[in-house]
Image 1 (tube, helix red, strand yellow):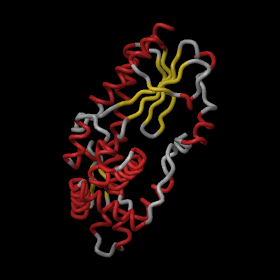
Image 2 (image 1 turned 90 degrees about the horizontal axis):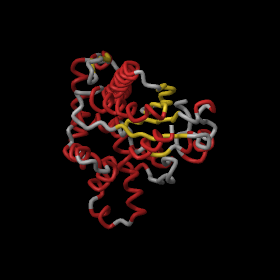
Image 3 (image 1 turned 180 degrees about the horizontal axis):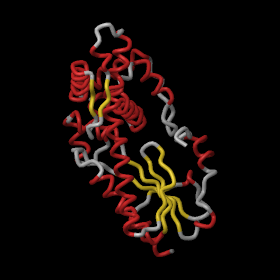
Image 4 (image 1 turned 120 degrees about the vertical axis):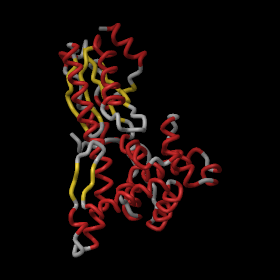
Amino acid sequence: MQNFPSRGRLAHLVKGIFIIPPELQKDWVWVFADLSQIEVRILTHYCQEPSLVEGYAHGLDIHAATAEAMFGDRWDRADAKERKTLRSIGKQLNFSIVYGVGPKGLSDILFKGDGFEPGIDASEDECKDFIERYMTARPMVISWIEKTRRDARRTGVILNAQGRRREFYELLDRDTPMKVIKGIERELTNFVIQGSAADMYKKGLALSYARFKREGLRIKCINTIHDEIQYLVHKEDLERSAQIVKVAFEEDAAPWCSTPIVMDFEYVAGGDMAWSDKKDLTPEIIETLAKAA
């Protein structure tokens, strides 16, 4: 399921196959709970880059803010279409730079696009310039990456936020080839961020499941895909179930995280809607669905 196309026409066709089981269509809702930008939020916790901290504290568009910081006057002069392009560059850098993506890798990522918008045909030289601009605009991100690598080279060990460790003793061996060292250094920050996110995700699942069971709610966890959890929920239990999921993931699963965690909700209801038709689940929609039960 994790290898499904996530966006674009092919994704719409594939996801259009999946519907709520016919016997549950009258009283149950298919809910998609997604951890919003969790990797960049954890990165912000670690690096304490002021602009990222401020942005998440006030609910700003982090990718647009990154593009604005990178491109300055060009952003100010840009029309809506160009700003969308610049934001795409900022977005890809926010997600990619911490994993050691180089100019060629960034060029490939930008060229592929995100499924909604066409890709950006940026040369390696242009991407090298984008990376340098990012480093200038987000210096605390780069400082944290370098510190993490220095600490690992000194000890041969790296820890994630929950204290889970991974050993890289090749870094202590003077005979380890530089190519191997560079590969390991790219894995270091990946482990810290994705390892922390994965452990947080599992804790949120365990906490929410225990609360569902304790309160006797009619809810079934049917799938997990990357940062998304999919549930089937009885309409009468929808409001309480969503509250439990929000508290479990946003408050209780990662008390160590200084960056606000946000869980977004979408839904599918009835027999005419498929996975490809999911929509935002708002408090008003929850109230409407509960009344229809």
